[in-house]
Amino acid sequence: MILALVKAKSFDDPDQRKTLINVVQFSLIGSIFSNSLLVLGCAFLAPGFKKDSHFNVQATSANVSLLMLASFVMILPAPYEGKSLICLSTLFGTFFFPPTPMLCFCLNKKKGSSELAVSRAAAILLLIMYSCLLVFVLFTHKDIGENKELVGAMILHEIHSDGQQGDEHEHDHEHDHDHDHNHDHEHENEHQHSKEKDEEVGHAEEDDDELKMSMFGSMALLLSTTILVAVLSEFLVAAIEPMSSNAGIKEAFVGMILLPIIGNCFFRVFVLYVNIVVSFGGNAVEHITAIRMARKGKMDIALSIAIGSATQVAMFVVALAVIVGWILDIPMTLDFPQFEVQMFIYTSIIIFALISDGSSNWLEGAMLLCLYVMIAIAVWHQEI
Image 1 (cartoon, rainbow, N blue to C red):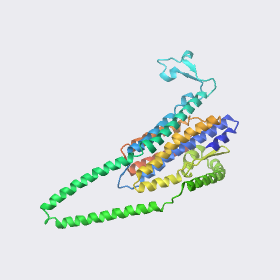
Image 2: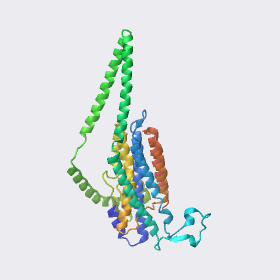
Image 3: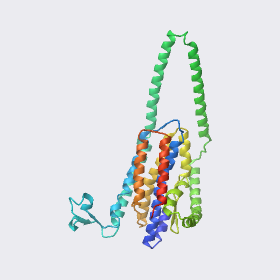
């Protein structure tokens, strides 16, 4: 991302620079759609067609609420685009404040400075709210899921104990009549318990087979992968440019749909070359991991990967791009293409409605995938 903004600064043509910034914005919002719709939809489908999956609503709704907040923030700079004046009639209506010069006040004489000021202030607030989310999840409310599971276990234990007492009372009165039936029932319970134990052992063995690395090894691998992707990105850009021009594929479709799906799992790198911005959205391995966790019944982890990644892009990466542009004196704002912003807002509302009941099923997953395909079709035919 920093490399892309540095490259954009080198262009003297304002129109060309604006075009490149728009492509960066397409790449960012494409990563949000890919995580919140494609990855989440596949995670809902992964457990199968015959059962619902349950997850912690409080932990998930925190991420989705911030996702909705980010979508709202993206519409704030729109009224100030290309304007140096703001009228009270614009804010409160022409009935109460007719559009006269006396009711307008100058924010700044420089064209577009209001848009930059609003975007930069909003970016700072987004970074603060994302920091609050980290404190909420990692420190103050890190035991949200544990407390819920503990209460559920206590309730199930109490019901099971009452059932055992009732069975013992009935067994004292009708021992001879139900002896064979109880023996068969106990045999079935032992068989079921053994089967569940074998499944738990299998999951434990799968977890043990996973690669474990030290902090130093992880950081070394991350650094080497970053350097490798930075080098390979030049070849990727060289291949995408003729493909985009010869096949007639718009840059918006490449940035929003294609590249976020095939990205690297550790980071988001933006490489700029000859009017093309490539976004490595980090969804390839995230997609696989979310599906694996969902199939194992660890839906909380799957949702944290899907929705958490989308929230990270919307709250942290987008805001960081604005701050870096501010430092480099590049007009990077939160004024994203309004069609994509509208889709982002409605997508956030749909996701919030789906996770509000604390359960998911294959139909909800199919809905999210269908929505992602419809967005892809709309972007394909969008005139930029």
